[in-house]
Image (cartoon, rainbow, N blue to C red):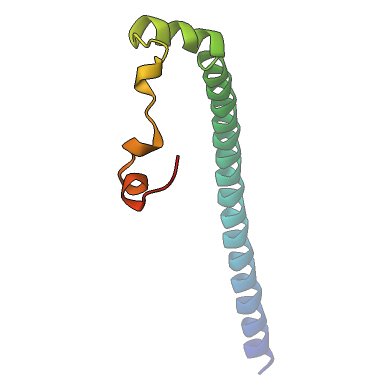
Length: 98
């Protein structure tokens, strides 16, 4: 009976040691993955900062004004382009006084 109890305790100690070893490996894998994710996060944040700086540079009002002037051929509005309220169908049908 004493030999059986000793054998049982040795088996429990062995199983516990094996479980602790497996847990250690799992923790190491998790730490490695965490470090990878942290590196990816830092790289993504740096890329976002670069893109935000580029966006700010490309959206400068003076640059956009030059591009609009060069490519859109916009002209100031003339008074003939502005219509009165009578040109709006809903207002004309309701007979709103001008």
